[in-house]
Image (cartoon, rainbow, N blue to C red; front, side):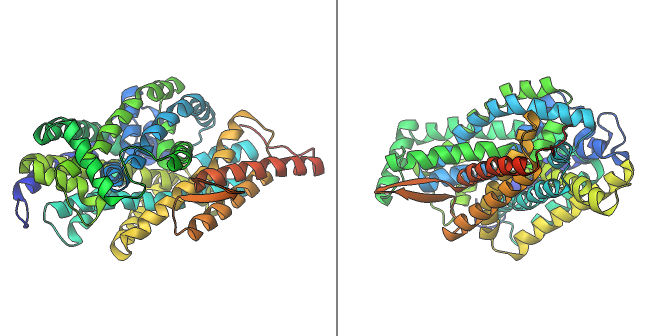
Length: 496
């Protein structure tokens, strides 16, 4: 490829992008139910997705385009530490197996659409419901922006410059999401995941074979990290064990608190569907491990980049025929469309149910809810696009980091209420506020880094800020519940 437009790659890219666009609009007619007449139909696909559709949908919005870009980039930059995503995606599925079927049953029985709906039913607190809803909305916005960043990286790799291509892709995404709701990303996820599997499996087989095998790959990566010095390397240093473990655990607890992952849970047709997916979804973890290896492969291929985010596009651009590079780029771009659509839908559901219906129009009809959600999904996408176009990319990265810290603070309110009525709403709200406040302040004080250190005597321990904030959140909620229960023993949250 030359430094101009890669026309063959671009042609392949446009073909597959056009294919999923047609599928996105066709999805409005896929499966029964009028999309525009009920929020269940537009925002949850009619709650009728079985095992395979749910597997592709949840996998599609959990393993995103930015995952394909960012995980190899992190491994390229910091070595073994970048593999923390593997244990976290292993830890999360037992949690999903145990907790999410219970959440589904409560939501299905009462017609809940969002996590904030479930929290309000459990505790009868509008303030706690609003805290959960706003946290979800704020945490989701930078996540959508990151998908657009992933798309922008591959568009630039094909030689296209300027803002028009990303705007055009956004407009197409916005239109078919508005038209088809959750059915669109659910249908497109089939194509996206199959393409990603083809791309990654081809890369991890063909590229090492070209470069002399995995022995040569690991040797090249080890030489590069040795030359850098410091904490990077093919294996973790002892000082990295605790931060690595806490980052993996905290990320696992946060993963299914996000509106987009919960949307896939609410859209499932049964609790058994969720259990089966908790068993089947680790197949994506294997794929993620292979994706991460691309960071090491880049060293053996002699890839030199100014930004680690360019590692994957440059790898395909350098080592593969132009047509396959176009196929890979289209897989990554489509991998941005699916999660971006689900994220905007999840955010729209939250705003419609827990802000608009709760505070603006409590008597809104089902069709009115669907209409408000459609408009909100457009506004959310416009906000994410403006974020990318008007602000430095680093802002999106920083806010996404804070988003993970924030969203995990909703876990006590959502999960504890599924199993016990002991906690008090006031206490959970106080715990949420303390966790958000301490976590944000600590991360901000450390230059928006995910890790912080605490000293006991001569020993210093480094840990993930989000997990530390969650433990503080829970401790405050327990203590405050004891105090409030002593002062006002008659008041209890209501379960639904």
